[in-house]
Image (tube, rainbow, N blue to C red; front, top):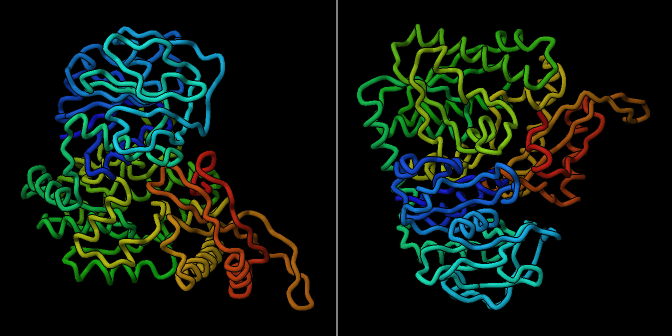
Length: 504
């Protein structure tokens, strides 16, 4: 059982899915024009129509299929989704003359969506068009100064719409509103980590059976959790850990020590020379990713022939990876991921991605259930291309060595000051800049290192971490003292969007 979200291209669609999962409800995102047959595969108990950058008055504006809205499921429309729902029911919409964007206050809240909530509350608005007249049988449930119909529902409580965005943190009672909708719709709330683990094991047994699985183990949270899952489920597997020379300090040692005692069938491949030779002279970040992806395929092909046969290639791909690589309706492709697409066709394997619809924190919880040590389970995300995309410009052994030592100083300092688990991801970037400085009585011309730390829930959006100034002062001095090639340290204060978390 699930809630299916029709995606009209909103930047917040995946946040809706995330919030529902926090309420112990499985959620799936499909395109706004998905046929009823595709939606029914998820055994939905309710639908949510997302927002959109489009206007309902645009020529060719996206609309859901009539058969979907006539399926008899409870529906919540959010912003543009409310416009679609009201229009389909015979209501009337008004083109926006004044855009309402940002914080607003709704008042006189009433009805099932606002059960147990204050009569007046702050919300996050983002719209121009608005509902002018409700369809027959609908009732106003909330208003704002600029929006007389800020929320509404039908008398039978099967259909509802809100003009604001309950899924964002800027709507403080948004989770309560979504919870009330789930209660209105009678949605089962049994999406727990334990149930997910059992379902994944059953899925692996049904899909894999007695066939063999090849797994690319990167050392990150996703692939180490997947390796542990395969071992726990008794799947015949071969985990291949490629030491491409782009790892963090001490990473190979840590991964091998954690995985082998857990029953993971692990082999480590020394491939530093291969990868660095493929990266020689390359400065463009997408070219780096493609070169690294091609080298991975080459190594896997060699290991598959040596240790095969294998039917499946397993990858720790997550939902945000899929979203950023392929996008959905109205969503842009942000950057390529070496572990999404392309590999199975060349290798002749079937792709196995058990975590494809999970968020990072859900995988961390699975790791906890599987007994992964916290030093692996709570590790910050690390890109598949490794330190190569944290070096701006060409990747060389010398530049890797400088970045690896600077990054280790930053991460060690975060741990020592109890700040590591307070940020989603922290990293050092080696820029192509050099800067004049003074060490002792002499002039220096050292490298510029940028530090980045962000807070986030799932990596889809992120705010820069406001680390204490005293800590930043400490870690900058520490890096310059202990990594003498570095002459200046700067701190990145951009958020996602507009920036991405990684620099490349």
